[in-house]
Length: 271
Image 1 (cartoon, rainbow, N blue to C red):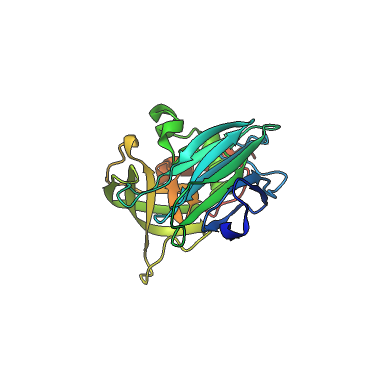
Image 2 (cartoon, helix red, strand yellow; image 1 turned 90 degrees about the horizontal axis):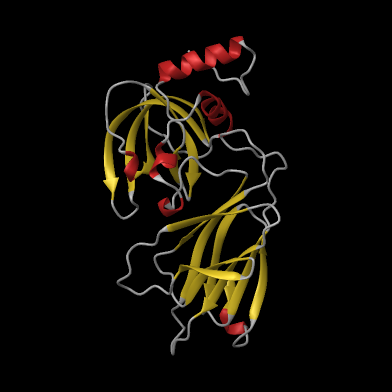
C-alpha cells in the first residue's frame, strides 16, 4: 500500500514487485510510482509446451474504483498506456497481459492525474507474474489471434498440461453462457473427478459430482454437448481459464501410449 500525500509533486518513487501475484493500493495519488517486475519464480518453471525460455508473462487488472492515476507499461524506456484515469461511466476494467523477454527492461509506471480533491481517489490493481508461460489463451484477446487462442492442443501439450496446470478435472459441459463485459464464454462444468485444483474451484455436496465454472475466449465458440472431457488450465485473479481440454477417451489413449513408451512427464491415476 502506498500513500501519495507523502510524495512531492513530480517525484517518482521506485518500487520492486518480488511476489508472483498481489495487490497494489495507491491512496491519494500524487507524483508517480515506477514498479519494476522482479518476481522470485522457480528456476525451472515450464509452460504447457514444456519449454524454458526465461519468458515472464504478466497480467494486471484494475479495480472498479481505479481513480486518480493512469497506468502505463514501460518497455525499454517507451511508455504504452494500459489504463486511463477511470470515470464513473467507464465500462468494467479489462485484464491486460504482456510478456517480458530475457534481458528486456520492463516496468509499470503509475502517473497521478491532477485533481482538486484527491481525498476519495485510490488507484488499485491486482497483478500476476508467471515464468515461462505464454498461455494457450490470453485474457487480453487483442494480443493473440483467434487461431492461436482456439487451436486444439497436441499430445505433447496435453501431457504437459496435466502436470503444470492449476486444475485438472474430468467432467461434462452443462451449459455455456456469454459474458460480454469480459468477452468470454463461461463453461458450467459438472466435474465427476477432480484430479488436482490449486484453489477451491470445483465444489459441491454431491458425492458423485462437483460443479464449477471455466472461462475461455468468446471467439472460440464453445458449445454444450455430450461426452466427458479432461479440463485443464490456469487460475487468473481467482477465476479458472481453460487451457487444454481433450475428450477424456482421447486423453486416455494418448496417456496410455505415452506411458507404454515411458514418455509421460508425470503420473495421473486415470481409469
